[in-house]
Length: 353
Length: 277
Image 1: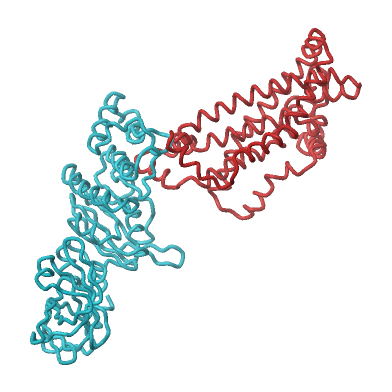
Image 2: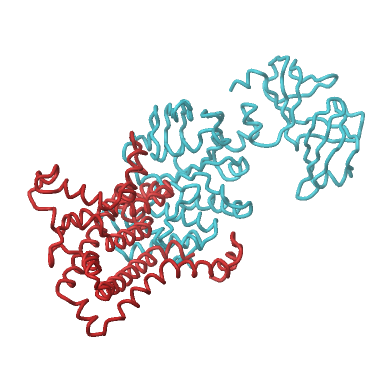
């Protein structure tokens, strides 16, 4: 268990972190998710001990921290491999710098490094230098090197940020498996919501130095507590209107909403994910809005459709499964009727979060 | 590394033939031609005469002194140059830029001025000399001090940019894996700056070997004791013994060339791992 209590950090006048309180249970894979400048990397560096918090305390396993050097492993965004050392020497580094009493005999170090290289599938690359490796391979060396000292906590700063999409996806699956095998508490920083949703047990969403929401991927995705989280975790369509009697009113339409039905507001905003937007050709569907199809992106598993509302010229984005799309046979420039299926309504109060 | 060479075909400057031709021409005019004159001049001597001149006792003593003091001064500059570069890169303190500018002054100062200043300062009754129990002026120590002075900028200026470009994350990674500060410096930082430091060392050494102006004042020029090789050459020139002077110059040239080649080899060997790919 890592317990962060009231952590604040300033860089000059700029307040990077504002009173962060956070509990991270042992053995979990946690994502710190946020846009750039949200303070996520600062928070990670403070947990690592690379940066000191201006205020607040961190407890590890119910123990105040002063000296926890090797308990925490850190993987840097740009790997920070030692370029004058081979892959083998890089991985062995943490084992070789140990005090003589604690240091393993040479043969044992060799075995352990081999084992780790096997774990990251780089056995044949032991004698290469970092400059002879691809980005993904370097990242795996960095991981193996960090794991060599058997940290209780593994911290990764944008671990896949510098890699191309395919390698990224592969590596994050692999990180998930690795985490399940080695079972260290793992915290990684990312600005990619897909990555966080895909890999983490738990997501901590940060914005402007504040924890906005934390929870399982399911919780934050399906029950975002603020417009910011809703926006950050995926594409959205906005329906502005009046909130009354558990319904969102806009012109002649009224839509069912999820959540608290008692709320009233003159200036509510309904959020809808593209896949929760219904499209029909049927004029008679109640509470639907006419819109022109302006663009169809039809490759891939789902079909993305861009629409322009006839009444307000606002753009909307819908996502259909291929089957639905084939059934409807939609065409560009066609007039259709849309209706939000799952409306998540936020009132001005929510914007202050 | 065939692939690397192919990638290099994208050159910023066109005309490999032209630029190489120019480089060779330029080097010939400026370096090779004057140096070859040394060989031509000394060829006026017979082989026996040549050997006689260059192995004369007084000349042999001067080689020892010149190479010994130049080497000592370079080692001192290597150690303290790295230290100074470190301080300028890693710490921020008032007048840092001003002090940084001071580093290059030994280059700008006429060497004779430096020599006279150092001699006055370190003389037995001089401002500094009076506090030092041993004799500095007119000893090899004095010569070494002068050479340290004129060679100061090389190592500092070579190492500074490398240190500046060193990712902070490398050190942090080292600490995170449990290494001490000393281990981090020895195993991570030092190998990175070593090639540059060695280049600085080679430059200091080369400069110190040929230095004349600042040394002659502080050396005292006692034959067999504090007489450097450039001075012997100078003396011979003043006596119109051009052949003898150039003969000694030839020996100096060859020895320096071999030593610089060795240092370059060492430098290549240390940087090979970083640069080869």
